[in-house]
Amino acid sequence: MKKPMYSCEEHINEALDDWVYGEETFPKLDLVDNSKNLWITCGYCENRAIYIVGNECSDT
Ligand SMILES: [Zn+2]
Image 1 (spheres, rainbow, N blue to C red):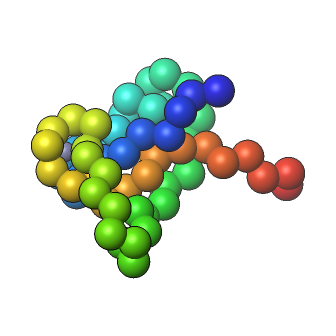
Image 2 (image 1 turned 90 degrees about the vertical axis):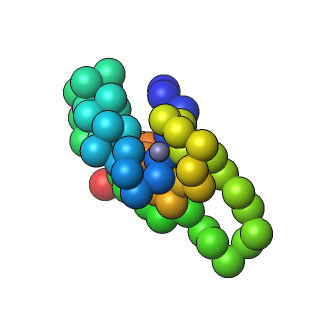
């Protein structure tokens, strides 16, 4: 399974495109938890990531 990807506001569309292209499924989209003082860098640039793109499996 693919690891989650992190993306800033600007690159979220690219992250989604990459995911869909690679996985052929639509990913789960979450916001990075900003209540913790974490700085997670976008996978496409040096900005702070605000989105987590990934597929958390739920047994539905
Ligand atoms: Zn970015």
